[in-house]
Length: 433
Image 1 (tube, one colour):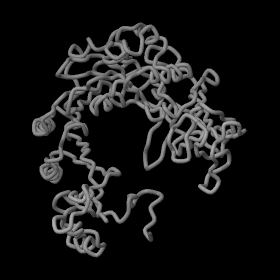
Image 2: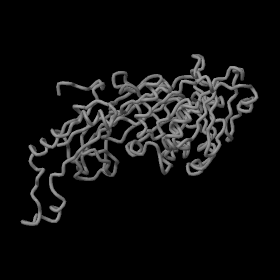
Image 3: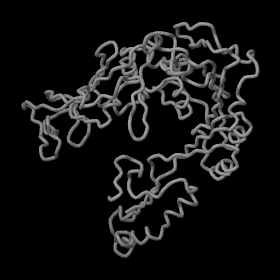
C-alpha cells in the first residue's frame, strides 16, 4: 500500500514586469543581426527582416544551462529543447491532455479513415509484438493476438505451417500546403522520411521505442507520409507517429554521425518555425531572430522580433538578473526548487510574476513487505517478523501521515492531494472511483 502526492513540476515560468526595458536604444546596436539575404547552403542560415530597427521588440530568456546540442538525434538537454521550440513549430502540440496539429492538416483517426488496422499474413522469422507486448522474432510456440483478437481468450499459439494473420496499424499524415524552410525551400514529405532515416542511423534517436516498433515510414505523396507498425503493435498514440522533418536539401551531404558534431545541425539548425539562430556565443548566449517565412506570419506572429537566450545556472543569480531587467523570463531549466518561498514573496510584492504548474508525477511512499534478510531464506530466530505484511499495519502508518500538511509546508500549498493516479482536471478523471 502506498500514498501518493502529485508533485509540483518545479517548472517555474517567471515573467519580469520590465519587458519594455529590452527595447533597443539605437539601430546600430542590432543592425549586425540582420543580414540582407537568405542563402540555401550548409552555413548558418540568417534570416532577413522587413521590420524597422527602431521598432524591434526583444525578449531575454534565461536558461539554467547552455544547450549541449540543437540536433534532435543527439539527446538535447532541457535548455536545448526550449531553444528548439522557437526554431521548429510542432509538428504537434500537446495541451489539456490532448494533441493539436501544427503543421499537419489534421490528426489522423480511425473515424476519418486515415488510421486503420490491416490484416497481414505473418510467417516464421517476422518481427511481431507478442501477446505480452514484447517485440519478438516469430517462432513456433510464440503466443500472439491473431487479426481481430483483442482479448486473452483468443490468443493463438503460432505454428510454423499455419496461415496466420495479424493486425497492422497503418496511419497517414498530411502536411499543410506551402510550408517552407527558413531559407525558402519547400518543406515536403521527403523531409519527414529523411528524418526517419536519420533516426534509424543515429546512436541517440529521439524515438527509439517507436523506431523498434515501426515496420516502415514512407512518403505517400508530396505532402503525405504513411506509418506502418510491426504486426501486433497497437499504439494508443498513433496520431503522433509523424517524424519531425529535417532539411534534406542541406543535411543530405552529411552522414548521420557527421551531423552530430556539425555546426549546421548542432549549432545552427534551420527550421520552419518562428525564429532562426543568428548567433551563438559559447558560455554566454544564443540569439534568434524572427523568421519572415514563418507560415503564421500573416497572423502577425511572432510578436517578438529577437529572442536572446542567456545561460545562468545559479538560481539566485537568475532571480537577481530577473529583478535587474537582464532576464524577462526564467526558463524551467533553472533549478528553482529551493526558491519557491522567495518567488512567492516577489509575486506578492509585484516585483515579479510567478507561475507554477503541475505535471503528472507522484511522490510515493512504498512499504517493503519482505525484509531483505529473507533473500537468503527465512532463518528462525535470526530474521525479524514481517511487520508490514499485515495491511492494517500499513494502513495505520498511512493514517499517521498528514498529506495535506506536507502539501502546505513542503510543497508550498501549490498542489492538491490526489485521490487517484489521474489528475482531477484530466478528462478521464472520475471522482466516484
